Image (cartoon, rainbow, N blue to C red; front, side, top):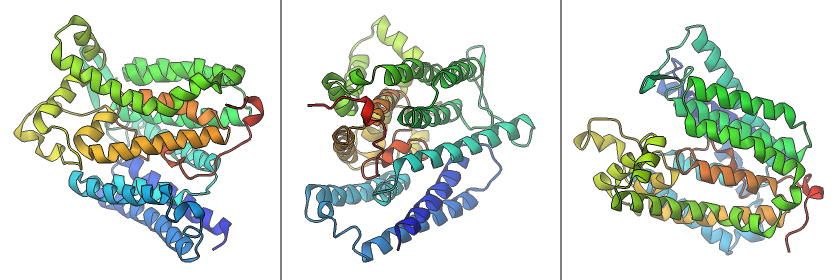
Length: 386
């Protein structure tokens, strides 16, 4: 198989996967069976490409895929992902693994462009269809405020997709020296729009933070490549995991006004997480929690912190491997002198404290960076980390 054919198979598979998965977050009148067919065809493209590459020794003859640390890591990731997917009944875990492996040597900038075009197109189609009354709409209330979803199932689904599209575009913008002030205007507009109409305080806050972020990357590149920033980028996922645990322990052991305020600001995410811990407990290998919640609780329940999604649903075993993979990915970016992607991943790790999209590939395209081919075009603006 030629490199061009290989890439084509990945791109087609990824587009179909995105379409099938993202439609599941909307109110589009498309059956689950049809979506599964679309996803299945996409996965078939990816799997076929991988098998052909394997038989041609394009993968196993590579040094890093022999009896190396990376080879052992991916074997462990496959085994634990299978266990976690079966126990939690979340097949996305296996699909994440397959796509991460299949993205080896695929140009990450092209992956970002495919994600932006596909996700933005579906986003616009959904909003227009909702405005024309072609699809239903879900309304949620927070106090006296009506939260509009614009054709999505939940306000968070709508706003978080915008966040990840903007993060992907930010990388391409800085790498290829595109205008930033047009994007700043877009950030401000979307931040205000999502805050007013969807009352997505946390997601809108992330969008607003992209304003200083893009200015920082554009005009202070040397600081972005400093050792201090590098340490935060490398270990931010671990730091956030520990902070999430500390915060929950503090919430459980304290009845202070500060904890109550944080709980209210985060839409009672701490209360829901505490309920999840008490109902199900921590799991090493994964467990199904939503199919059995009715026997515990009849009201609103959802685990929104990505870190506690691992703790309570996917399993601590998978979390440990994800932590290792994240650190490796950041080290690899820094080694290749690509400092833009790690900086953007800082926002993803922080955002994941209060949102559960980190390990959902239809949102977090940055899950594909461990083996993808990363752009080096931005390196001239950065000093080397010693």
